[in-house]
Image 1 (cartoon, rainbow over the protein chains, first blue to last red):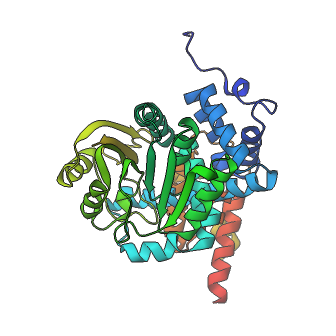
Image 2: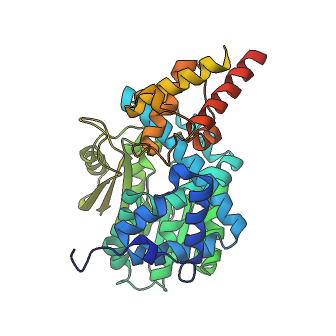
Image 3: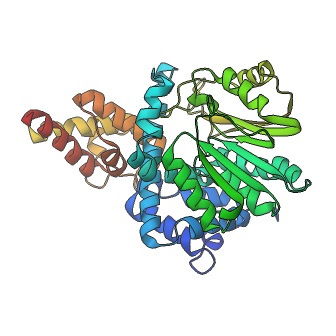
Length: 312
Length: 85
């Protein structure tokens, strides 16, 4: 056993040091045994930094037992829907045929679905799913570290979702200001509450907008996390993003690969497809990071993954 | 469809997914007692049951049905619901 081996999960999470995470673990174990080992499994992979990071998020966004229980339920329903679609995808090798407008009606504009399942589910998945958390760490050290070197940086996130990425920038860069665009009123409200919970509301503005058609203020720092797979024509979207990036600026752009979800309509099978589209839209790719969700369940079985790029 | 018949068919589906003999599947068979029963294999069980009985479990049932007794109960509920329509 090396000295860097992770500590036993039981020692990483205790009710005194991480009370919200300990309670989430207890709720999952007690009420949703299908996901009962998720907290310990992820803690064992990432260690105390992950525990502190997730505990801080839960303490701010889900401070009460009731909020934690609701978030846990939302996560399990979000995750089981994904797993069900993923098994079908493994068989059919395609996403269910759907237009962007259909996905918007079913998901982004359905306030109950967004509030109960999608937004809490996605936020928790960013910590419990190995590949999602690996991407947040890549974001922190490769992208936020560049923003930290600038004076009074302006950051825009297109498709802000739960707000977790922009929140991490505003937390770590005290002079930064953020703007979050989303087509979903539920996302706009959730992200604003998220910033408020961290005391960042004075440096954040939420905007209800369709970034394909509504005007966007050009900025030096752009964030676009797992939006491309939701679109019928990602290249057109990327061209528009490129036009919104000021000279010398950088964009952090990610895409989900082989990941069947209710609102995923454009299938990326590998990261090269994303690179090709970024370059076709005029971006120059500077860094990339690819992480799979887990090992394949069998030879040739596709595995959900996320590909992230920093591009100028 | 008789209750015994439903139970036996559920037993056979679970046995096949986890490589067990049908008689090994009983009241204590669950995610707690079958080592290979993880979230991915759980969906294999659910999809196989849906095909076997031509039913669709909702997400809450899918999350909750993690033992042989609960799965049998949920399948019976779905079949009864179909019969009353």
